[in-house]
Image (cartoon, rainbow, N blue to C red; front, side, top):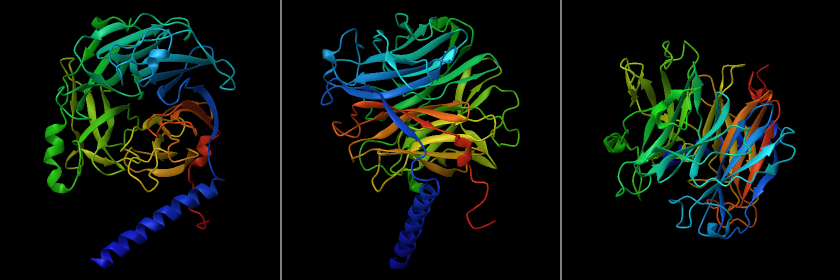
Length: 417
């Protein structure tokens, strides 16, 4: 027993030293940092997950979800259903100088958990206020329409995760609570698809899959030792929609009708997530199904930082997938260290560097969103400074730029030349 513990400790120490060495070779942090938005009352108004999209004519558009018990002090409408009784509110920030400066628009959007994206000639946000909502901007993010109801059924959940736009179709996942009686995170993914150039505020233009309930699969896996959840329940949430372009990848679909779904998982382990697929069937209906891998089905997968929200983008120039994630720092659900990794196939990940580290334990850099912008990665993070109430309840949103991010790719191991 002691020998096994010694081996585990030695391997863990080697991994930590290797990561430290990677950061040292990179010259420390790989990203710059500035503040986009700050809470007017850090002890009761919290800045939750931001989104970022490149709008039209080079404009950068950022959305920020304001929540907390003190949002009643905010001007403008709030969501009927929120993190607290006072409701949530989305605010919009714009930059026309490549992220050097930002200005807040007058928009006050009464919803939460937004997904921000560009489709056709407009910008869109899907969010919720108990019921599922969508809003549209036709003037490059300056103003937004009154939220339209996509589904009246309660309750929904998500975070700002990737949207797939391919072959004229928009595909995303929003999550629905399995039942109001479930403990967190009792939600399951619902696949959504629409024509890119349709009016996405019209619910008749969307197709929805049936809700996938993860309870049975999670419980069936317990004898294997995954998941181990001492409190609450196992579950999955905050789904990334990812398209596979490499025909040699085992998940490649030549018809283009399926996408890979990569999910945060509440398993009791920091770097284990869930992978499934979203598919359009021959009759045109949508479904969430198991992935076929080698001789059977796969479910759990190694995804760095998958005990918290992560974000995946595909780089067409290199064919690699880039993963923005939290890095464990000695505690479960560590939210202070924001890291980058990359993979050729979504299965094998290489650490690339640390984007940012919060100045204190309760100053997070997490729940981040990113886009590829030329040779750089542009990132917005749910963050905190010394005034943040907790690591979860931050008081600022930060903007990070990773310049020439492709130079972080290992071409050879140090000392192997």
